[in-house]
Length: 404
Image 1: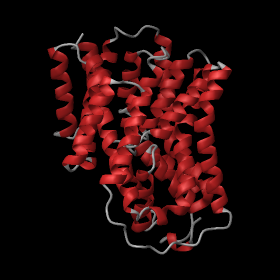
Image 2: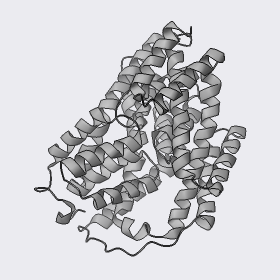
Image 3: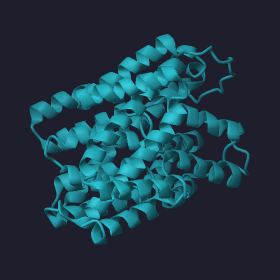
């Protein structure tokens, strides 16, 4: 799938080198998907010279177009471009491994505590989540809703998902806004681009990846219902979340919450505590699924649930990259596709705005002192530019020693 002109350095890196580079990025990439993309460019384009800027930007555009964890998909796409499927697996595992291990360990710790509803540090993490989600809503709203038609769409979606909560409403809102965008928000088609020759068998691989993606999306709900196995049901829930979420890790919060909390698998407090803790570690926010899977399973082998949830939530995004990449040069210039993406992104902002109110604020804020603490955390993040991990640590300490 790659061509020699992709590289400006001394030659193609091997699979081990790709995995090592992304493992280093997995330990050092703080700040969410947009920041991750900056770290990737600095390391892969400027330092290692494995990609030209134009090639890197092309892969970023592809992954922003698709549902799933954007920065993790970019890691997968870069690895695939440089060394095929083996490179894609090496880059993906390397990037997600540090945060995945950390979140599974934190899930095992929370699961061992029993009832944690009165823990002060837990309440501090919930307030940290208020600040982080508020910043995400503002940042994504500024970027993805720069005009009034998209702002109106986002506001309507927020109201809709608050009145009719649940994953079906969220998915329906994204689909409806994509159709509206296809009709009303499309731009002019982009200029035609020369398409690089692809290796033999690539189209067959793409068709296989798309078939697996659709097959699992359609068949898992039925298999879950007939088997009665909670592990299958959990895999189905996390797979659908990974299949239908645009905009990165913050947006998966409401969709996962609507799946695991009503079923009684995870309490609302433990859910928000894990989300707050996820801000303190580097790497992709989708590894929050590893925490949830571990809490759901509990016991000595709870880590198996974490690995199952991680596999389920990352798999659809990777399958979509493998399926669409060979055709990306043909798709990206079409105005209608651009409009559909604009509409879907506006819906994403609306869903996240609704989640900021419920459950993040309604469950995290109890009184005036909590409002003051959350506002302080927002100031630390946005104005003083304090790293998210430091804000999380401060809020956990405040919850334990000051806000009790």
